[in-house]
Structure formats: structure tokens, C-alpha cells
Image (tube, rainbow, N blue to C red; front, side):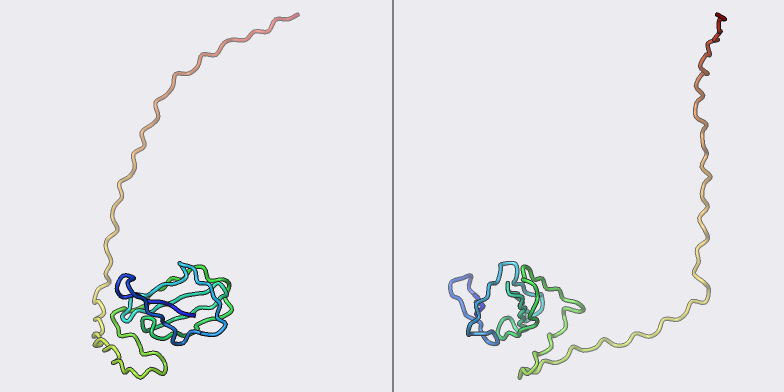
Length: 148
């Protein structure tokens, strides 16, 4: 199985196979089943119609099977949770030594307020209800019964 990458608008393509199965790997990947995240280097993810999910934390240079036995993967989306500005952790077993992101300095504890911070309740205007205009009373007709 191969994922191809272009860096020049499609003039040339580079196969990315490191970590992907190469024998008897007859997989189908739909267009919406491949995505990238917003980190640098980009994480690349794709799912197959046979229910496998692969991920690459280094822009496709290496791949790892993340999950197997899923239903058909029709769509994959990536979301960065937390601080996207932090350095991506190196992949397990990689030789690159990325520096961990510096932790922000601890903020001093906030002083408790001396007085309760309450606002006086806003006065509501009483709603004045206007009476509905009276309709003239309907005239009643006198009904008389005749004896037979």
C-alpha cells in the first residue's frame, strides 16, 4: 500500500510506504477518508474501507496502524486539542530529539475579595395593563312562547 505526496503541484509524486503493508494490501481509501492536522510537521491520517486507520505524525514519512476492526471508514477528520503551538512529540522509537515545550510560569494566586461582589437588584417597572375596550352589549330579543 502506498500514499503519494507531491510538493510541486502534481508535477512529480513521491511514494510514502514506510510502515504501510506492502504485500497483499488490497485496500480502498475514499477521498474523504484522508486528512491532515494543523501541526508542524503535519499529522496525516487515513482510513480504509476494510476498517483500518493509519496515522503519520511526520508528514507521511512513517506510518503506524492506529486501529483495526472498525466499520468501513468513509470519512476522517483531525482536530488539535490543546495548544497547537507546542512542539509535536517525537514518534516512539524515532531518533529525533525535539525539545519539550516550555511550561508557562505559574501565576500568583488571586487575592480573595474583601467584600462580596454583588450588584443591587435592578428595579423592574410594574407593567401597566390597559383594560381592553368594551364592546357594546348585544341586544337580546325577547322570545315569547305561544300556547297551542
